[in-house]
Length: 196
Image: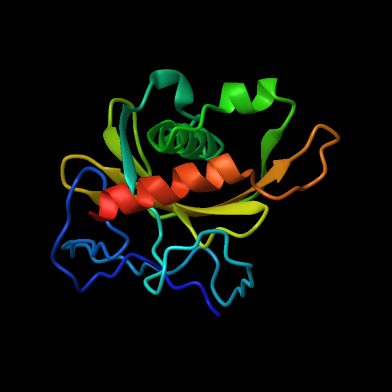
C-alpha cells in the first residue's frame, strides 16, 4: 500500500491544536506540488491497537517554535539537519500528551530508537520565523511507531517540511521487542479521548 501525502492542495479547512486524522490542509496561493516523503513505498504492519471497526490514527499534536540564529547555515536559512531536531521535539511533546515520559522509558532500561527518518524540504525557514510542528502516530505495529511530521510557517501556514519517521521499542540489550501493554493502552486512550 503506498503512503499518500496528507497535504491536499485543493482543500479548504485547517485547525491549529490537536487534530483528527481526517484533517484537510488549506490551499495556498503558491500551491507547491506536495507529494509524500515516501513515494511508492510499501508498509506491512501487524496492528498494535484494537480500536474496533474504525481504525484511527492519533490526532496531531502541535508545537509552536521560533527559529534561533544559531540554527542557520551560511546561506541564512535553517540548516537541513536542524529540521530533524524540530521533528524530535514534536515527538517528545506527543509522548507527553499520550502520557509517555521518555526519561522513564530510558531509566527502565528500554529505549525508543529512531530507525528511519525521511525529510522532504518544501521551503526554507529564516532567523526569527515562527512555525508550528505537527506530529501524530500513524500505522503502529507490534514493535514500531510510525510518525507523520509537518512543519508550517506562521502565520500564513506555508508548508515548510513533510517527514515520515519510524521508532522501534528496544529492550535492555537493544533488541526490538513488542511495545509494552501500558504504552499501547495509553496510546489507545489518547486516540479515543481525542475522537470523542
